[in-house]
Length: 369
Ligand code: SAH
Image (cartoon, rainbow, N blue to C red):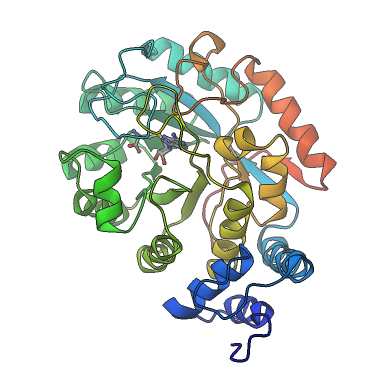
């Protein structure tokens, strides 16, 4: 670490992470602040040239780890947005209950099956069912949907991303055949969590859900938004510490993007660069973790997903939701790929990946590390 005002030794910190070390809170703060070009607690921020150099060293290190574990293969997951009714009122989210302007929809069980069939023909072997917390999609309805997908496509993984539920629901869905569950912790800082959510939601419950999912044998994904309102570098350091503690199989992160019907409509979007920095840091911390280059990252920058892969991500999640519903699943404004058919989306992503020297894989893509 620097004591005399010369630039932070960012390289040394990156090497420490890469070697499997777990730098403490102060060092992680210095690393993130340094890579963002702010001095934070350090006497001097790096200049533009040092910053460019440190970031490219970070991304190259993360890529080296990614290549060692996954080669140039990128897993694809077919995202099916099953409905946008939600009983919650997360302040940042476009489909929160209180948004009277949202056009609500639900896919039927037959529509969900048809999405999977189409996806299967396009080479998808993982289907991610995501939606708001909607009592219509009861425990038994989801159970039925999961069973049906697994019966039609026994060689595929089913991932659920349906929010918080009780342990018994998670247990039944797992028993019905669900393999994986995505539930971002959103922010590991309790006060920050409470500032982004109404009092009906608690950070403790969300974390308890994550541990229950792990115990039930799911491959579990957590994650957070980058640049959510009120977020500080300290919060991000806590997010990384929580990921270390939980040891998830997947980590989904994307920039916060404002939605016009929320109180944060005028809040600036999260930084693409900081999202890439965090992807790279997570890759170095957890070499085998499944790390998507998210739709939010692709929505924030035209080449966001490519840059995500080049920063160490190894998963993309093309949209299989029927086109007429896609734009209605609007968590934020400016969502990409709301007009293309699934086949076009897959083709486009496959070209984009090839363009940067990577290859979309056909296969379930289980966590193996
Ligand atoms: N109801 C499910 C799925 C939520 S949507 C659940 O509770 O897990 C998936 C993710 O989108 C959320 O976890 C959140 O991190 C992200 N998201 C929501 N609103 C967003 C916004 N305005 N900008 C960026 N990401 C957002």
